[in-house]
Each structure stands twice: as C-alpha cells, then as structure tokens.
Length: 469
Image (cartoon, rainbow, N blue to C red; front, top):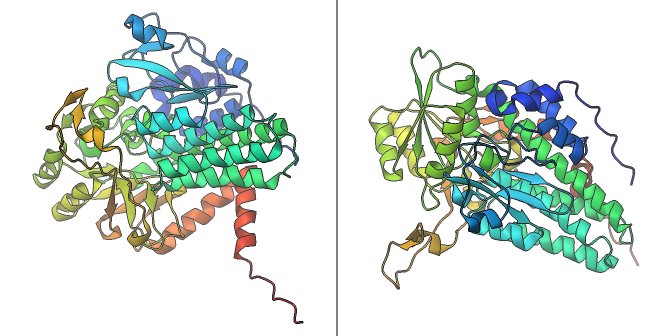
C-alpha cells in the first residue's frame, strides 16, 4: 500500500507553539495548520518547537519540568516526570516511539504527573481508574495504543500479530461501549489492518497504523477548533453583560485532546475578550468538574464557580444561567443522545426555564446507524468509585452501589448541536446526516478512514444471486 504524501510544513508552526499556552483559543486557523505540521515532523523537531514552554505535543517531543514546579514526594518523583499543577497548560498525552505518556488526572488539581502506557492493559486501566477521563480523548488514546501494540508485535507471526491488534481494539470497545468516537477510531484502525495482506511486513503495517492514529489525533484538534470558531452562532446573542454558562464534566483539553469542546467554547470566548463566567457542576463520583474543569479554567484565567451537582438544576431555575454547555458520547440519527451522567437533569431544568442546552461535540460522535435512544448503549463505571471519596469509605460496608456513567437525553431537550460542521438545529435528522457527509469528505485523506468507507460500501452491496443448478 503506498504511503500517504507528507503534509508540507507550516511556516507559522514555531509561533503557534510559542504562544500555545496563552492564546490557543484565539488561534483557530493557526491551530489547524500547526497541528498538521507537527504530524509531519519527527519527535526531535517537535522538541525543538516546544522547548522551554511547558507545552508538549500529542505526537512527540518531551518537556522538562518547569523550574517553578514544586518538588513532589519521593514516591511521586519515582513514578516519572512531573510538573506542579500551577506550572501551565499541557496536552493530555504524548505519543512516543514505544510508549504513550498520559497525565494522571486523578492527581489534579495539585499535581501534574505522567503515567507510562506500554500496551492495551495499561490504557484500559487508565480509563477504568479515572486516570484519563473523557470520551474524545479516550478514542485518541485508544488509537495511539493500538498503533503501539502493532509496533510491538511487528516481528510476530502474521496470524498472531493480527489477533493481537484485534484483541487490543476489542478491549477498547468493551471499555467504552457507549462511545461512538471510540467505535469509529477502532473501526478505522482495524479497517486499515484488513486492507493489508495477512503476510504484510509487520513494520510497514505498524507505520501505517501510527500514521492513522496521528491522523485521528490531528482531526480531533481540527474538529474542536472548528467548534470554538462557530460558538458565537450557538450562544445567546444581545447580551451586554457577562455570559453565564453552566457546564459539567471534563470537556476541556484534558478530556478532549488539546483544545476542548464545551470548555473550549468558554475559554475561547474569554480569550476573545468577551465577558464570561462559568458555573461548574462538581460531576461526581470522579469530581471531574471540580478537579479537572476548574483547574483548566483557572489555568486560562476564566472566572468560574464550583457548585454541587444537586444544586445545578436549581441555579438554572433561579435564573442564574444563560446557556448550558455539555458534550455527548453518542448521538442517534434523530438527535437523541447518550451523554455523561448528570446531563439529563440539567437538560430538564434548562427546558423548564427556557434556557438553551447546547451540545458541543465533534461529528465523530454521530452514529447514523442508531435510529433513536433505544439503540444507545448505556455505560456503568466501577461501583467502587461511588462508595469512596479520596480513599475514604462514604457508605457502610456491604452497601450495594451502582455507578451509571451516561444519561440518555431526548432530542426534544436539545436547543442545538455545536459541531465541527456548524450549528445544527431541530429537526435534527437531516442536519445530522448532512454534517456527517461533509465531515466524512474531509476525513477521506486518511488511509484508515478510506479503508473503512470502502469496507462499509462492500458490506452494503447486495449479494450476488446463487447460480441456478
């Protein structure tokens, strides 16, 4: 299979990375060009671009701890590179030759520390234990890990190599059954595997999968920057005072990859000099709103207030919120959606109060094969997370717990979808289908996506009739 042509370097890439920590949300056009430029560079070139800024790229490069970082305990220091959580912004993971380093989000807001992921078991553990939170970033991490698995299996026998890669992809699907973005990422990786003959050179296959994983990561960066660029069309207009936004969960860079979805919209408005205040639901049981979203807002200098989950619907009813910004794990063809747990009561309260609920999400979360809410796969996380807080048991021994991870939200409660293909409004069926078609055309440059489209087209073709005896 011929290699894809390399993307020409972007002459603005150095300025992009030098200013990334301060004004990423105001540089949407530069974001797209620079992300693709980084994809075309080696890890050493990325290090040259990133050196000294405290920012590391998803696709390679390494940044030394900030001199302002406070030293961690000896136990933490022994586990790998670290930065104090006040040292600045950094991407959620970086993709090296034989390992993926991801920030351990369980330690926020106090410490930024990396964990090393060397295979599917490590990545699944990070997703299950809350070290990495967010449907979008989970899909990117899954693709990077499958590429890593392929590289480690490149010298294995062909049948064993293919089985190993398939096994890794299946593990990610099982871990996030409700995530359309995870399903699509794994479909792309496996379609590319199937496009190669069984006896293909293992190193060639691994390189192709590496490029596809990088393409998935870069596409997400583009998608989320497009979302931020179109945000003014979805936000309430005509306000001359502070825009009061309610959000929940981890929808910033750490949960989405580099830019962010719902939180990226908030940050971009602030960086543009438009007054905004974020009301953040704590988002139990991982407290992703408090530990992660508030930390990211603080890094960006965005005014914000943390509230308990139970208080959020009441604040909407009290007239303290102008718009509710959330994300989604999967969107059905009619606009019904599976979203992080806690979204449903926010949607009900917003409708009752006449406050718009805007779902900020990439088109990769749209699953046209699912007609409505009945086909959305619910997710449950580990029950133990609901029984303890900061290592302290909060319920008597023997207490049964359930920890739902997603809510099903009907399309009737959604004011708009803010996507990489613009703002989509009800009735949603036609706009969602059109958005997927346009986004698919953009993604056809990627070998794995092309292979997946071809695979699906073959599957949809009518079977040839059996010859008559």
